[in-house]
Image (cartoon, rainbow, N blue to C red; front, side, top):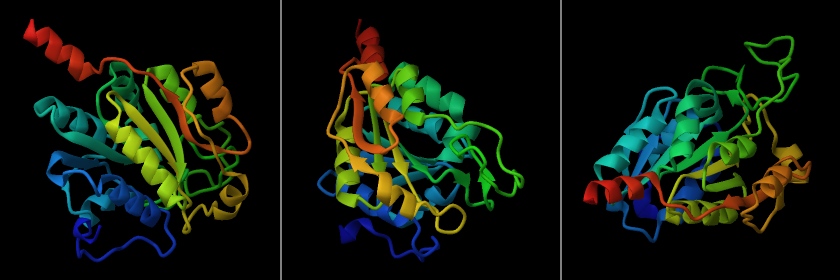
Length: 253
């Protein structure tokens, strides 16, 4: 995998969960033709992936990584397009793009580095921050309940919905590989501790448990997503023509 790592100076904090996600992504694509892969990132700590990995990449605007990924896939359907985004990037700034891409079943893979805060701009709360979260934008604690990304994506129409835990690199790499190979919209939420602003290592290490799915039962998958033990694995999978399949079929006629 050394040929997938650029010699750029790495600026992630020591212990950052992004290191694990970076290695998992490299493992997932190591046996694939890298010229057929494009990585699109948004704005945030996650976006440095594009600086460190030796594949085709594109920096998008904040919250706008997904439409760029959709455009690249529309331009060349033979490419495997991976969108690397953060919880603030896609659950706050770009949530409408996320929902509609899932609804359309665009054949792209979206990996969310979910550390429950806007880390790059110093600890503002996001849609997945827990109730009571204290940060620079909520100094007295957030009064909002967080969204459940798994439930949101299943309800929106995503046909591959999974959750991983950053330190479990091999498990996460397997999920990402399956997501890339899936024909349709693939969503992977990665539980990512943020050592600088919201260190969840101890909590996640106690609660995370591997789940061997997937289910084609939406209600069962959503129920699983709310379990206290924090299951990781593929929650939901459905075989369905992708947006690109339908578009190409219509144009052929």
